Image (cartoon, rainbow, N blue to C red; front, side, top):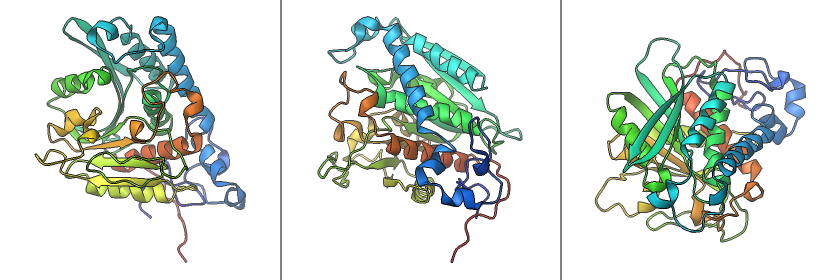
Amino acid sequence: MSKHRLLVVATAIALAGCQGPGLNPSLVIGRPATREVESISAVNAMDAILSQDDLRADVGAMMAAHAAQSPTMFPRLMPPTFDTYGETPHTGIAQDVAQRFRDLGLTPVLEPFSVDGHDFCNVYADIPARHKSNDFVILSAHHDTWYTPADDNTSGLAILFAAARLLENSNPNSNIRLLAFDGEELNLLGSQAYVQAHAQDHIKLVVNMDCMAFASQAPDSQVSPTGLPLPDTANFLLAVGNPGTKGQIDQLKKLANVLPAALSVQGGAMDVTAPDFAAKDVWRSDQGSFWLKRIPAIFLTDTGPFRDNRYHTDDDTLDSLDWDFFQRTALTTVGAVAEFAGCQLPKHPGKTDK
């Protein structure tokens, strides 16, 4: 088994070689599998690495921050415009994200920018490479919101925070940047500003998350976007990348399949910039700004409005989320980023094939 594989002990998955707070001692990475570990349930095995309670706490805290900073804007009854959106102190949310990074032991960087007289702010924190490197693997999500923001997109922020907890001491080969964009809901303003400001950076890969926690087992619960046929049950994560990301998406799919409770991942690498590319809806989040620059980028999403009738309404709340599904998307995403960045893992015997 590759030493850069996500490994949950007892099922041959490892999480980036780091031991975050709250890890069950019998699941510490690098220790041999034990009978105790082998006997626990799949959910408990995943909880020992990344608990649903942690995800719920981070989503709840960020939703509370949004509500506290813009109480007159909940629920929002119209699409955001500069006139309405500019009234919300969303730049304060960047400060909340920055403080969460500090709480998790990272050093945040705030990058304010303005568009037509309105202020915005991106924020990121880095997990530095173990040797000097100019390469970046970026894990991103937008922090601004439209209506109440459980799935869209505090779910993405919660996975950023999970990555901070789990990868802080992972000693990757490439720098890992945990990046929260502002202004996504106003036509990807934050990612556009970031790409312009960081044109000289060597970005190895971007993994962008937008809506990561809604699922349904009901028949015919999934609608397929134009040009992108999908299964009709809304219980999978969609991964779409531009040319050059096939290998990484294949890695992510394999990783999702060996979780204690496997996650279905649909999609693949596509020629998203081709003039005749029909699935235009996959451009609706911040990876699009990187695709325009031919930077390798993968979009991860539960597909939002194509399965969730609470999307962009004031019903996008904690009780709408599927926490088992969310836990699996989070573990898959963080584990994949660990692989892509070459996080350092202790040697482990892994799973014996029979």
